Amino acid sequence: MKVDGKHFRSIWRERDGWSVGAIDQRRLPHEFIVAKLTSCEDAAVAIRDMLVRGAPLIGATAAYGMALAMREDASDAGLKRAYETLVVARPTAINLKWALDEMRAALAPIDPLERAEAAYARADEIVEQDVEINRGIAGNGLKLIEAIAAKKPGEVVNVLTHCNAGWLATVDWGTATAPIYLAHERGIKVHVWVDETRPRNQGASLTAWELGHHGVPHTVIPDNTGGHLMQHGMVDLAIVGTDRVAANGDVCNKIGTYLKALAAHDNGVPFYVALPSPTIDFAVHDGIRDIPIEQRSGVEVTDMTGRTADGRLETVRIVPEGSPVANYAFDVTPARLVTGLITERGVLKPDRASLAGAFPERIAAAVG
Ligand SMILES: CSC[C@H]1O[C@H](OP(=O)(O)O)[C@H](O)[C@@H]1O
Image (cartoon, rainbow, N blue to C red; front, side, top):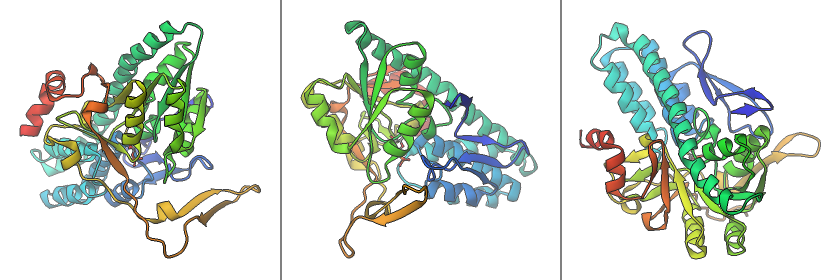
């Protein structure tokens, strides 16, 4: 999407034809730094350390990581090592394994001498597919925003979102933000309540940054504010992203999503989840029971990094030394709290029949 009028994607193949550029999202919103990935290990570390993050972007980065690996060692052993290095970078977003399975399926059957070129070609396809899918999500989600706008002509449609499921979480457009960007571009008055999303503040640091640079009206709110806004009719609908949707429609997303879904349910606020089909995991039948929840370092909770008045970046501790910390990075919202799943093939009910009906090929892939 646009950054002050100039179009950007979150990841790209560099002009040299082999290295990979990516926005270092750990530095936003204070610094716009582009990182250059030149090895499979670089890609794995970028995912693990959240230089890149967001389920679809994690998948795209892993795909290019496999291509970088094939430059290094295109043997069967090299392919196996690359897969095993990348697949453990983060455990929750299914897009990581999906992308690696796609790459392995394309590379394993062919001559190792052809693997590097084929890997970049397949990774490019995955990248372009993500953009195309997100455009589809934008169009399908737009109808929801238009329907609300029609009921309140001339007034603003207020959307609440959690974490960052924006263009920074994908290659472009985003998932939850895709309908918002399209509505904004179509002249619909839209405003976004942006959950800061502790502890890494992807909302405050990333969603606010991208919406602001694209000109979309928004307000950053503490995570605990959403329920109050919903109680007072200040939220027309919630749209969030997801890192994995189970076959039963349960939705795994950034920690705190479940609480927002409960508040939305209690206040009759439509709660939508936007996702590309690679985020559906038909191999998981009960999201709450079966989806692995990443636990990250407690430092993400105890420390905060910000910019001082004189422009220096500083990290400070906000938790007493010695206080134990728990840092669950995701939670699972049961399907019963989800109004609908905004996909590239339409807005679906959060249940197995609807998911299987819309994406039969994903069922086949899961069965294997
Ligand atoms: C479009 S997927 C975005 C999804 O990924 C985020 O997690 P993280 O920032 O830890 O990669 C969050 O769950 C978002 O909803």
